[in-house]
Amino acid sequence: MQSSVPAFKLAFTARIAAVITGPHALAYWGNPLPKGLPKEAALVGPTKSRDLVWRGGMTQANETYEIEVVVSVLGPIQKSQEELLTRAYALNDLIISDVIGAWKALDYGGVVDIVLPGSATDAELIDDAGKDREARITQSYSVTAKI
Image (tube, rainbow, N blue to C red):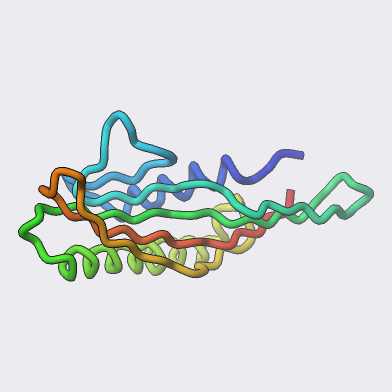
């Protein structure tokens, strides 16, 4: 029995990359350093609250966990925080509708059984040099798989 987490993260990152495109965009699993962040990024992050519920004489389990995706939009200090945050939410909503929504119609390619968007938080940041702004959204997704 093998966890679905690595396969899900790989498939999720690939599907996000197909939606968030452009010369200044990046979909990435983990931390993109030393590459650094481009102007628009979606980073598939840590797994939280992974639980196994055993069935079938401990040979099968229902696996549940949460995955975080961080959507980041960077811009010069001259851009308003409103403009950056609006774009960040647009990208986040695009992932929910075009990635999760379309993938659900394909039964998640057999990788997992259910993916549901959960809560989201946002942050408005300025770099230490005061030259750039960032709008960042951390969106959680609840995932269920049979393993």
